[in-house]
Each structure stands twice: as structure tokens, then as C-alpha cells.
Amino acid sequence: MNYKTQGVCSRAIHFDVVDNKVTNVAFEGGCSGNTQGVAALVEGMDIDEAIRRMEGIRCGFKSTSCPDQLATALKQYKAQN
Image (cartoon, rainbow, N blue to C red):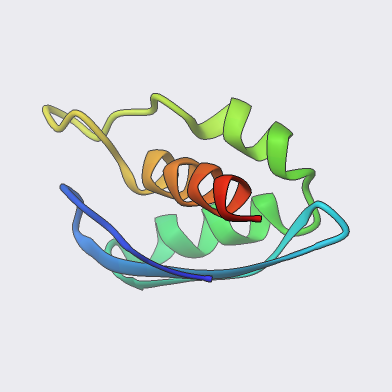
């Protein structure tokens, strides 16, 4: 899935879900080390667990963050499939 982010430095998130597991997460833009870290940490994680862990995380004064945007993207994926 390709998801266009909102309210964060990254522009988009690309990922796959295989057997309800998150895989191949890649962020376009954003803080390279942080987004690579998030992608590595969620690799192979159950989609519901990933959402639970990342939803609601904020970046400084922003109302969202790259992890929160990934949770939003995963929720959108679930709603469509």
C-alpha cells in the first residue's frame, strides 16, 4: 500500500501486509534514522499490535508523528481489506 502522510516531515509510507504481518515498510522523506528504525521495528509485527503501539505518538508540538501516520495507514489498509 502507498499512503500519503499528513502533518509530518515524511511525504509517504509504502508497506505490504502478508498474513496479517507488516512488511517492507519504507518512508519517503522524514528523519532517515528514525523512519528506518520504525520500519525495522515493525517488520513482521502483527498489524493490530503495530497499530496499538504506534497510534497516538506525537512529534514535538505536532498532533501526529511518522509512527502515528503509519498506524493511520495500517488502519486504512484494514478498512479496505
